[in-house]
Image 1 (tube, rainbow, N blue to C red):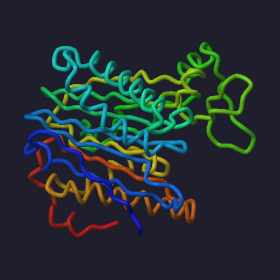
Image 2: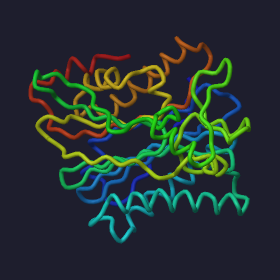
Image 3: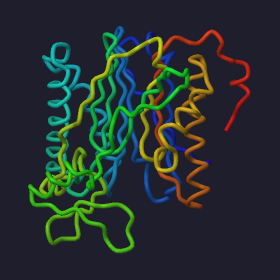
Length: 310
């Protein structure tokens, strides 16, 4: 497979993070298109921060690359980063979008019909924060009362047909409709056939903003239960197109913390295989980040899981 792997982005001392994090960022089977996905992994002391970006449109790769560079720095430098993370996340997403528009105005790229998803997960002080726009889903694997490892979605995909999203889009002069022969609902300017976005929130997409698409993130805060919570996984929709949240957790749960890199690669490979099975010679770009949260189970069958491959 002609995968184009993207580099890991790490800031600060990552000794407490990098051996508990696995990642994969693979170019899909789209010969004329670059890899439009991007990601970062950051560790500063006991803080972990992970981000996935999935670009779309003719300059989607430029927008995702720009935003993945800009957003974490804006967030970390925010004066309320430690005292009010929700406000800091909201400003960082807004300012990343505004910087993207400024770069577009200077001719670095064109974000009028190009943009990116952005999903950022931060673990700090036994708390997990998830802020996102778009459909790069974040999922936490946790153990229920029956001892089963189950998927719990941290994010909800920003689709135009969600009632609250549709209401905002219509209030701002946009339309949500499905074209004949098309599958997803899309966002259009009233009476126009563009921008045709299949998501209701993103960074960039300046024409989409005028149709009600917003860069304001949805934010979820959740306490971490180290005894029950096993790991968090963030993926672009190249994974979620044909793999459910629970199926992804089931695949990853075959591996222990010491095999977290192999686990991430296995999920990426399974996503690739599902695309080939469903679509033939078309595969979307695929990004996976897996961050271990819980203590490794003593009864983990490490030798057995290390023999498993997808």
